[in-house]
Image 1: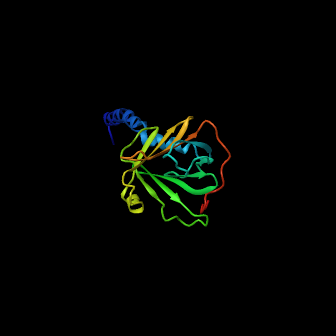
Image 2 (image 1 turned 90 degrees about the horizontal axis):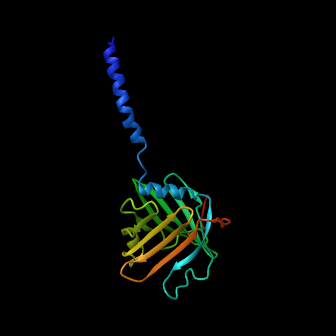
Length: 197
């Protein structure tokens, strides 16, 4: 049978450990975790976008209605269809793993089959910032698009303000920037091609 002194020491140890345990549970979120949390908050919502930058004479987005729809949110995967006019071929796929975030571009044909150029992108190489994550092209991307080794994508997410999708080919002036207004939601677009809910 334990003595009163032993019980007192055990109680004292628990009292001293408790504050450290509480501190461990309230560890501040990393920038990547904050970014992910804010992206999750947009789930189910759609927003209109506009072109901020594009190569001269480029017709990919010019004069077309641009929409993003944060359509599917799982714990570690978020899928965001990016609609360009009537083109429902594009979906951004974000995946979270071991404190890093991956961006992939899922491109489909009208029949739902993958395009020959699809699932390119890359992983973040650091925790990034709470309102910006950067995705340099990885080897998988270079295998898909031979001249993409210098591609860098970055996403800006300023809560209540805007979501920005950007891509730049380092060493050149080639850059795309699309900015979506998060202050106002719009009607959700149709499901992207090949989408299975």
